[in-house]
Image (cartoon, rainbow, N blue to C red):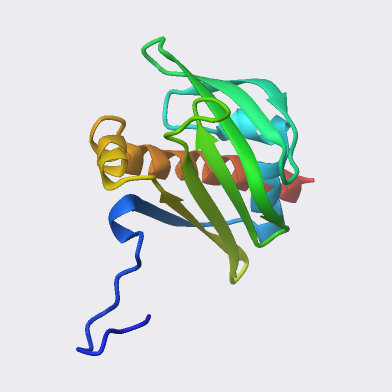
Length: 168
C-alpha cells in the first residue's frame, strides 16, 4: 500500500466514487473466469438474490456487448448493457456497465482473478462517474449487498460445477 509523506495510507483518486467487493471462491481461477465469459454460465448466476437474467445479445470480446434484462423478485425489469473494454484470460476483465449504449451514467468495473491456493480470489472494483452516483447506488440500489450476493451466487455456481466434476 502506498503511503503519504505523513505515513498515513494514501487514498486513490477514485476512492470516494468506488465500491470494492472481493471473495475467495473454492474453484480454479480458469473456471471462475470462464463463468464470466460464456452466456450459458452467466445466465445461471448473474445478479443478486432472487434476480434472474434474460440475455438479448452476447458477444464476449473487447468491444463486444452483452444486452440483457435483469428481472427483480418484485417483478421489476432492469434494462442492462455491458461492453468489455479489456480481457486478459484468466487474470482480469474490465467493462463498462449501464442501462444502454451511450448511457451517461455508465460505470466502469474491473474484475481481477487471482489464485489463492487451489481457490480463486476475485476482486470487483466499480468506479462511478461521480460520488453522488456511487452514493445513490449504495443507498437506493444496495450495490454493496447486491455485489456481495452476486459473488455468492457465482461461488455457489462454480463450486457446484467442481463438485459434479469430482463425482465423475
